[in-house]
Structures are given as structure tokens and as C-alpha cells.
Image (cartoon, rainbow, N blue to C red; front, side, top):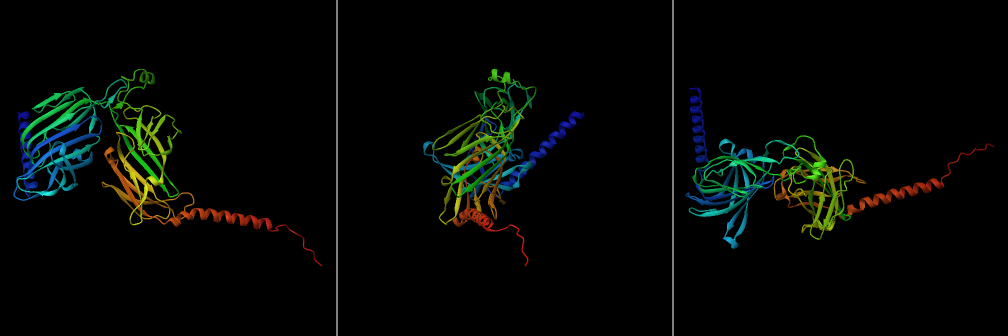
Length: 473
């Protein structure tokens, strides 16, 4: 009897949730009637940086033009959303053209904490018209190691949680989800008919005529031994000198965010059986540096680390670094990378007379997630009216630092952003005003100091400081 009562309560609760979802859906769509004719979602689980590609064909079935399309995300994905891009597709096959669209978060929430992002269309979508959208969004920290601890000889297994159907405030006439795993070793996956598997790919669907906010939870348990390299904090300091150089210093706090290592580490086994022992660990990292770097160094708290290789050409520079020890799950390493760059390759003069630095945002390390990135651009002394321009939102503050022979200090533009992925490695600019007369401040100061020193020496040599006995008559 008690179990029957619980079952009835659960059914009543589920019915209440369904009614609330439908009411919220009708509320959200009261001002415009859109439906998705076809949705295709491809989820790439090859690394710990998850890429999701959406292709949506949206039709306006209402009586008024629609200027935006809403994307819905569950609350557990919004916190892990690193970037979101959208584009309108015109043409077919080889004649396709893509027009980037603005994507902004909506302040209002949906049912059960659903978060919305608004895609602004280039032209309002009239009644009966349709548009094809391509969407890319990237998730971080979305693969859960299970088991959470593994020994040196075990492979790493992870959970991925999602929905077989796409969460949307619109009715979807037909949709299909493809999930690509890193290898064919899949322990288990949730079945939501129709479901099929071929090689590395799981296929959910096609599903027809799904109501708004339909959600079918799935779990995929599979093997993923790719490096889970996460930089907990990265501080990049870019110091500009108008005497001809830029000095870059990068301080890393790196961690392996995969399944934690348990037991004793055996270096003999690690080196003698590399294909079996420590397959989820990593001991090499590749950093993509700007071209024409010089004076490169790689060190930690102990001192210089000689296990690095630098390859340069006219277009790029690649620095392969090796920490002092291989990194297993839960292990950390801190180190510093520094290098110099020619000033003329990165600092230019704009049409209005201002100088600006054109530099690459993000982390030079390949396939890494940066939990917190801080870029400090140290401008020359005497710089005024600094401002930064970036293609995505970030926090900007100003500081003042002092170096050798500084009088009033140097202005520092501080840029901060969380959850940074390789797609954020795009140029940004820092504009500032600078009078070249300030370049003479330090040389004149040195000349003045040496001049006063020589004058003091001459005065000392010509001064008679000896004590004499005065004769009295």
C-alpha cells in the first residue's frame, strides 16, 4: 500500500511538472510562433573540451515577423558553457555562405531554471518563411570520471550526461542527435528508441513532433584517455617598451582534471610499458607562440627546465615543454614561460594618432581549459587613456606598476576572463595615447645623475677639507 501511494504521488508530481512546462512554454511563445522543422545535433566527445554543432531549420508559423530565435540550456550546462556562436546559412552545398549573428543571454529564465540565449536575425523572419542556422557551443568540465580514482595501469572511464532530444522552447518536427566518442570502448549508454551505434558514433533518433521543453536524460559511459589538461590560473604579463621590444611572462598553475591517481607511482613500469601504464597521463605539452620569438625560457620554482624544444619559422613558433614529472589525475605543476617579441610586429599607430597593441588572447597551450585567465598589459610610462577591445565580454580594470627608473609609474590594463578554451585564441587590441617625448625621461634622468655625480666628484677633489692651525699674532 505504501509503495502504491508513493507511485501515485510520483505520477502526480510528474503531471504537475508537465503542466508547468506547458504553461511556461505558452508564456514564452506568446509573442511569436516559431517551430523547428528539422534539428540535427552533433556532439564531439573526443577530448575533455566538448564541441556541439547544431543545424536548425526554423520556420515562422505566426502572423507577425520574428527578429530573434531562442536557444535553451539546462542550468547545469550554462555554468560550463565556454562559448556560443551562431550563423545564418544561405545557399546549398558548395555555394553556402555564412553570416555571423549576434548571440546574447536573456535575463528571464524558463521552467526548471532553463537559461535562454537570443540569436538576432539579420532580417525579420516573415510569416511562412524559414531560415537555416548553424550553432556551435563548447562545454567544459562536463565529463565525469567514473571510477573517480584509478591505478597507474587502468584506463580512464568517464560519464557524459545529456538529453536524447534537444531542449528547446519551440516544437521540433524532426530531430536527430549524434554523439561521437573518443574510441569504440563504450561501457554502456542509455537507450531511447530509436537508438543505434556504429563505430565511434551513437545515433539518437530521428524523433518526430516533440513538444517544447521535451527532455530525455541519457548517460554515456565510455573510455577517454586523452589528457585532461586544465590551467587553474594563468597570468600573462605583456610589457611594452617603445625602445623596440615586448617582454611576455606567463605563469601557469596546471592540473590533470581526470580520474585521480591511486596507489604508488612506478617510474620503471611507466617507462617500460608506455602503452599500458599511465595511458591517461601526459608528460608533453605544446605551446603555440607568436612568430619571431627570442630569449625563450621555461622554468619553475626549482630553476630552469631544460626538457623543452623550440621550433620557429616565419609564421609561428612551437615550444614543446615537458614537466619534471608526468602528470596523473589530480597532480599539479606550476611553471613559467617567458619570451621576447619585436615591437614592430605587434604595436601599431591608428588613424587618430593613438598607439595600439594587437595581441592574441587565450592560452598558448594546445587543448587546454583555463579556469581563470588574467592578462596584464604594462604600457610605457606616460601612456594615457588606455582602452581594450575584444570580440567577447571580459572584465577590465586599471592598475599602476613601478619598474626601474619610473617616476609616476606605468599604467597596467588588466583583462580577466573565466572558462577560456582554444576558440578564444583570437586577437584583441589595447589602445593608448603616448607622447614620444616620454622616451627621453629615463635617459635624461641617467645623464642628470651621472652629471651630478661628476660635479660632486670634481667639487670634492678641488675642495680643501684639511684642518689647519690658525696662527695668532
